[in-house]
Amino acid sequence: MSSVPQIKVPATYMRGGTSKGVFFNLNDLPQAAQVAGKARDQLLLRVIGSPDPYGKQIDGMGGATSSTSKTVILTKSSEPEHDVDYLFGQVSIDQAFVDWSGNCGNLTAAVGSFAISNGLVDADRIPENGICTVRIWQKNIQKTIIAHVPVTNGQVQETGDFELDGVTFPAAEVQIEFLDPADDGEEGGDMFPTGNVVDQLVVPDVGTFQATFINAGIPTIFLNAEDIGYQGTELQDHINGDAAALARFEKIRAYGAVHMGLIKDISEAAARQHTPKIAFVSKPKSYTSSSGKTVEATDVDLLVRALSMGKLHHAMMGTAAVAIGTAAAIPGTLVNLAAGGGEREAVRFGHPSGTLRVGAQAEFINDKWAVKKAIMSRSARVLMEGWVRVPGDSFSS
Image 1 (cartoon, one colour):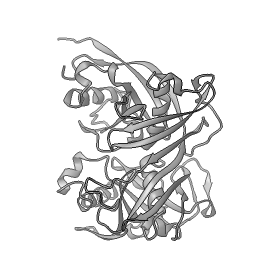
Image 2 (cartoon, one colour):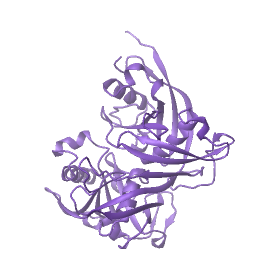
Image 3 (cartoon, rainbow, N blue to C red):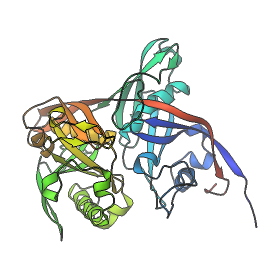
Image 4 (cartoon, rainbow, N blue to C red):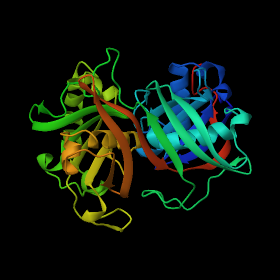
């Protein structure tokens, strides 16, 4: 029997927001994986431990959930007035593909920290004490993100008293600004791909639903919870163990993706699991979060539950939070109506792990909606750093 030695690749395992992922400096990757393509995908799949028919990712760094099956590749930015280029790869758990179609808003919180600590931000831009403003170019979606990272004695400050529902321990607060988060397309169209804030989505053998389709942060399909038989207070166990419900959500998502113009046929949705997201909203209700904490109806403006990679998310994806904040700011969307309607620049919503506040400023300019930026706070922490090992023949050279 032949054997091939493992190779070592410098890597950092980080938590960002309510996600975890393996971070790489592009220049540290094997030569064949420094460019997009099969070799890179094979390497990242092996690092994370996919595809795994058992769905556990035991033989890799993944944690068997969409929130923990993530990879990030960073390099000094080639874009003017930016510090770092950020490329995100969502690794499928049970299938052999890496989805590059969108951003991870949660891991964005860790990008600035990694960039500062790994020499990707010019030293003269890093204060000895204070806030370092890291200018991030998000390569997946071609957008600018600003991370405000606390620095103490010249080093990234990771500990603090900022609490984030969905994360057990407090840490230092990192404020994230998503500039011009709406995807207005090559033709300069509306962030609403259909031109409407609410549409009718027809899904054969499932039903017809009101839906808000929005490209902001990440392409997202919003539905009313009551229209699909839910209250909006559901936790993961209410949905993720129901195979029929998950299949129905995936069918709705596939038809919604076609409606948004992201794919031409529903058969393409299987290879594009990261986008669009599908979420459902409802007016405020009291419920018990996954940690056992009571969230009162008076604590929130609305409730939102979202699915990621085919499962109900344990908290809320950062990019989906941007979509929520943006949609909430625009009168007439399902998100805005669930929050009580009218104009607003911030919203606090309830999710399975607790609550989250996100702000967005919307303007109606030249007969279409525009959003200058969306803002939210996250935290990040290095969990481990050194080398990740993979068999030398696990990717094409």
